Image (cartoon, rainbow, N blue to C red):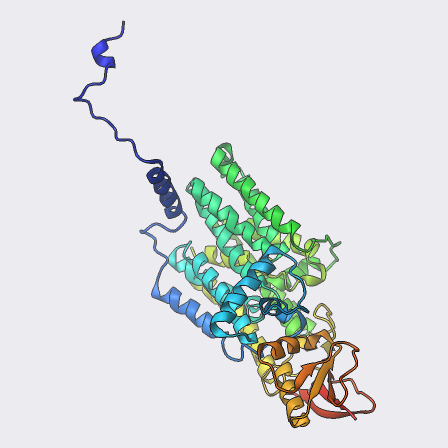
Length: 499
């Protein structure tokens, strides 16, 4: 028989106060987010990290509006931000978000190619800082160094043709947050990390690779316990639904049969020499040398990396990227290079956990050497063979090359047309998509008396007609007003006037 005294509520017994549901929710949310960032005993915030990120951002500022030269798709989002009716339609939710961001930025600083490129550079710097704060201080320096100085990161963050550089920052930030949240068994952290990783797919469909790698790592025996809890598999399913939605609204991925040199090309993207060859036309010997150096670095570090938890996570991410990139990217392997750059940065950071000097020197010297090579080409180089399209392996794409004046070709052509017209009404046309940024140039800063001539439309009577062509083409019956070459003399573009 139950004791009525023991079962009754006594005024002397302590009564646990009922907390409001808002307070409970806020407490659980803040405690969850606290587990995503490093605890106070291993701070990653340091003046050196801030200086490194600021230096990486500052290195991208000189000649940002002209190196590399703006070309066709470069100003698609910028034209949409200015509500141009001729602007290409947005293909994904990431394009729409980037367009909205550019619109807000143009409202503050004014429209321009430099402003559009600074948007991408700023987002990469912020994402790199966020990813570095998720690891210990020594590892954070190495991680940020690779993310900021890798040739792919350096050149693609200086162009707004594709916001893939934003995907690079998210492809490092999201998986690192997922790694930490799974190890701390934190439900809120896993939910946030899964959404960040899936968010990268909006900016590039190739960013689905890091999400697949995170799911595969979670399914391994050491981490599988989190999938036995509702919070774990719910976070993963919600992230998968988000990534699937992003893929649905993005240009469809196509699988390509890998060729014999597919794995070597993936290592080329890992080292950055694939980017170097696309923008500068580096020789096959240089490509083979950089790939060999990258393979050597991997071989020297694999034993140390495999002994670290972050290293094993980075190894799975890197392995998935090297296997899937040749299948998914096809001719777009260079713009999809962030898929291997992000896990390579994690790999080097894990190597720094046991061999910080070797990791810093190996990662820094390889990235810095190729990035310096690319910068010297843009400033002083030439090319004997220029490719007609970005995906042509025959040489460097001519639309990215910089004239000796170190100003954008469309800016130089606009000034030359106005000077030759001498105040008379004039129209300017072209047939190569490389010169499409001229549309944005005249829309952002209208030039009195100069308008665009679309396609084969007939020019208005009484106007002077000008046409832009590549430097190797000759227009019979037209007068060449001016031509532009690279520093070494390679012809790039010419402006012609109708006689």
